[in-house]
Image (cartoon, rainbow, N blue to C red; front, side, top):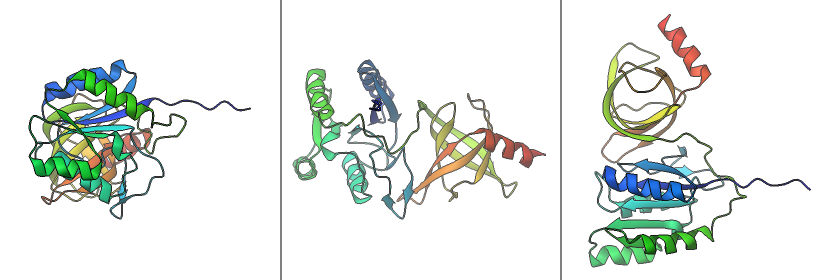
Length: 240
């Protein structure tokens, strides 16, 4: 009989306060989780949205925790939009954090089935909730996204050039890793488009390809960029 491999658990955390992200990340790492942190809301940070719906058969994460008060979108709206896009993460494994919630927001969380944590978080309560979440996690089931690199928060503006022209554009990096980055921009990029990064960054690559594009309500776009040997070769050809 073939032995099935058990995968690692994965958590996604949103909070615009760097210290909170750091503390929660360390907590989940101690529980042997793969952790992705974001300082601004991204509806589908690990996957690809097509036709305003998640087409993946499996969830991209096991647990998602979000702050309520964040720039441009609150945590409840974030989870509502994920639900509208057919997010595969069990809603019972999602939680909102806040120092204070109005009664109408508490009611909305109850209707959605999302857990609530009062800030500052009581880690005993957090541990109890995560233990309950883990009973619903199937570690034999693959994740919808296989991204394995750890993203680091990085708020900084960059200049970039598209493969089809020399005009320089500006973007704001949300996070980055050795293999890719997440960027907000006013320019509607296209999947698989090659992007040449013109600003010095603490990463090795200077050329990346667009993996996914997600429009925001403020007419901006959140773009996932990744780098492979292929994009390096294509980038070199552009510079030749």
